[in-house]
Length: 441
Image (cartoon, rainbow, N blue to C red; front, side, top):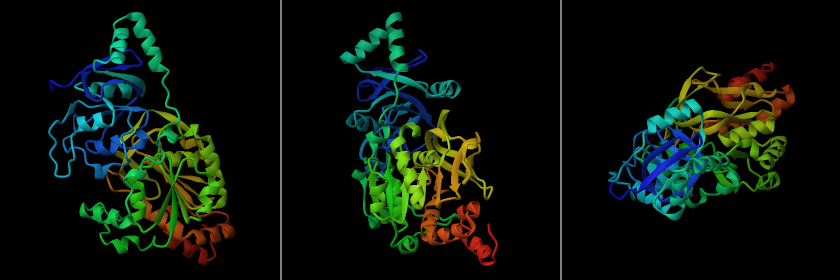
């Protein structure tokens, strides 16, 4: 550890955590957050949703299985800064391509280690997410800010600078970053099957046969609207036989409809969903077009805003691979992977929007099904890499929504609405039976 430089974290409330530098040296400001995942640090580092944030890992030992490029969620690291208690200098894994410190240096990510991450996490839970600055190394910029810290007037000015930080142009800054790690469907399925990361049905069974997994989605085309998409969203769509066309955030409704897709995937991404007014306006047009839509995380939030709901910032957000969510139609609780600082307000859902999942810890909205148009969305990550596979069946629900789109339009024309809970729960056959008996939902 002799090679590690002196470093510290300065929080907007004036508290300073002294530690050692990790990765690149320099100064960086960001929104200080924590994630509770015990593994998946590679995916965290390369997840575009962490853009603008200084990420603290609550699990103390990070880097023990090294850096594995095949597990990247995009082509680069997107965190503003990275904080761990104990970085592993000698990783052990047959897939490892290097260690954490070298990767952070290569990606120019400024990090901090050797602090009490438990104390920092408790502080963020009590006070809420706050801005912070990492000062690392002996460069001129680091020396300047250290000098400001040592003087009362200088520290006050520094804290004002930290407090003024705001994440801007988040979606535009990361859209398209997963293209560098894209692979074809056969490669995706074959490599996933080698580690049993294959599609999981609603009953928990895994589909190890590629033809069986892709049967229902064959011949169907979807547009993945990339607001900072994790690569595994595309992989999960490909594993189910869907042809995926990725469009970046600058696309509009006309661009998407011109591709003549059978469905639309709204991806995850960083920042405040309300900042994306142009995209939300375009989503409204796509709703009117009747295109089947599945939204995840930021996509879930922007779809809700387009439908007339509201979003607000959570005190410290949900970040980690152990978030419990309850499906209201079945009463079943799933463990999910999450990464978000905003949520759709439960009491703001308009007519035609049905709450489908809630977080069992705080009751916040985790999913919505729409009854007036063919769409559903979830706040959590059903593609969950790294994380639980419990909810990956939602990609099968998306395939079902696409394939039954014609039925949806017929039923809506006849009865004005659909039985959203039954539809989302996958009981389309039961709903059809009620229609054939002459009864509405």
